[in-house]
Length: 335
Image 1 (cartoon, rainbow, N blue to C red):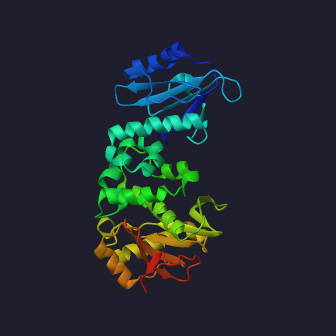
Image 2: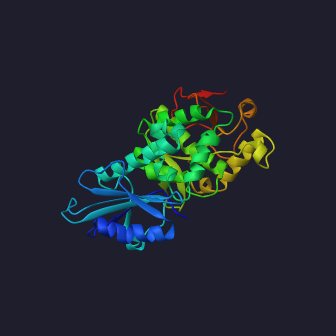
Image 3: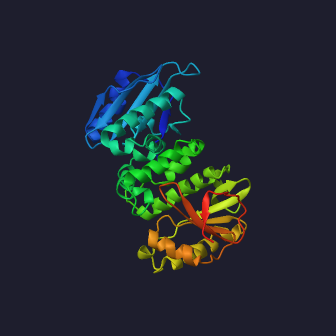
């Protein structure tokens, strides 16, 4: 399975004739392809865009004198990689030269404005997820998730839900972790909508931590072999999202919360018993959440916070055991 878009870097000499011979010709033979000028040009580089008849595309730029005085070239595309570039190293947007990364982002965002103007209106969200919105296998499913599933919020207006995450990503709180976090949304051809909604729980949690003024590190690799979702001032935090009761064996919202907490306690929390568990019930409808907030079911792990976020920026929740982090007045506690 292909992952999020990354550059391939070539340190060989390139020119227009070689681009046509070793990039365009094999792609044209395979898919039908056209070589065109890009909409933008990176400073100090020559650049071309390749458009495939099947909707794939690629960007390529080159210079005869890179930062170290040697030839430098970068390929980015969601199509089959030509053989001449198979053994090249891969770079994220941030790892490529600034002018190259900015150029590619401008090209992709301009393309998104044409293809999905409703999504491009939420510019910070769109730019953050560009590596998956244009990935080889995930470009259709990620767009459908945002379009038809309101980023995981039930009974919510699509634009309201996207504006919620757009405003958070505008803070830059996840900029340093862009590829790690964006890639979690998935680059699969098949749309697992609940898994994708569960991924957005990590973004919701990051917003919760940011609103509370807490510094955090996402995706923490542990010596136990497990990865936990966050480290917050030394405190480990794991996030889980129960399936709505109509979509799981548990036939009530309360049972769904209990069952999800138990499954986490049987996994990485067994190895890390002091971690804070956050149970995100944002997939629950209003009536389902009212039952949970009213009964406040216990969870097998302590400490735990069971909460629900809404696109208006509000959080409601309750605690199971003492909470090792200070969320101040960010969460409306249901006591």
